[in-house]
Image (cartoon, rainbow, N blue to C red; front, side):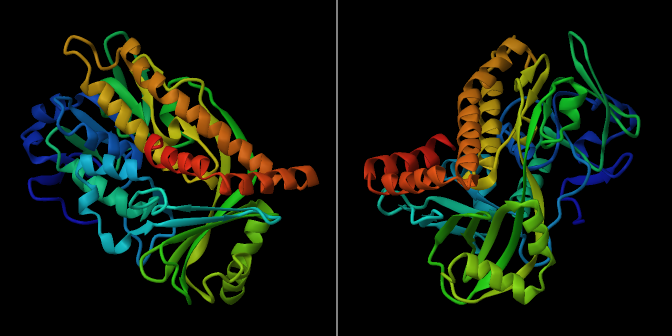
Length: 419
């Protein structure tokens, strides 16, 4: 844990991080428990929302169970951030503060089918600077956290755990495990796919397990990647190599659970050889930099993203297969659109008003449903061993490869509409 920034201090029960200006005496502390917005979850989407509201007059609380930490060395959990979301994060004030020496631009992407299909994307051919930025999750979270806690309209409650949630006509009340209560006009659930807040609010969702895990690890490569991202659709899942600075890459191998366990159980040299061979030794020998880890893959659909005095964002609102790389991009766009909706709200309208919140839901619904359907369809298409499906998916890759207009349209949709 790093010391608080100047102008802030650790005070209150449970190590609650609060602004110095808010800590005067017990009476002041008691009155500070009423907010316009309480965001439950200090992950990427929740913190992005808080920072996107920095210029508003709204008072905001962020409730999070633990402080963000940076791992020693490189973080194995990385994200491909679209140029549109890079612009959004620049607008929140955090993008330019990220360590560029730990980020890599994706200039080209090569996609391979399992029976001769191939598709290439190039930033240069599309007239853009980059297709995406590969950034460590912990790098973004730590910068978002530090930016949010310096904001004059944000109070951080950490470590803190929600224990009760109640709604009435005038407010929502979040009770913390230590007995404190936070009243708010709007509760934002940003606490992940297994959201406690969403369950407490009575919103039932549907989960579709894929029976797969995403195996992640970082490697040093013998050959330069030249800013190229690779993706292979294989009989044993989808393997992606994502460029990191220098000769480093990060991989995500979405594969059946049994094979994921086998991969994680391999000796280091055997694991490196297995990953290198799966990618056709495109970057020569691979040396392991971070040990493999894995997470379960599933689709999650929520029937709605809002309720009276409630909004869902990020993984609390939707979860998709990582083969498209759009998960966190959807979450950042949720934060952007909700912030814009709240900022545009007339003064006389309550920020928890369900009719106004439905503007946010309508603005996000089409994109979320489209990407969930597309990634789920691709997962089923490339997961089938049936000969007709094998022929269809590889023919589809080759068709797009030979239609530059369609290929360019897909690139521009990914970098623009998806954030």
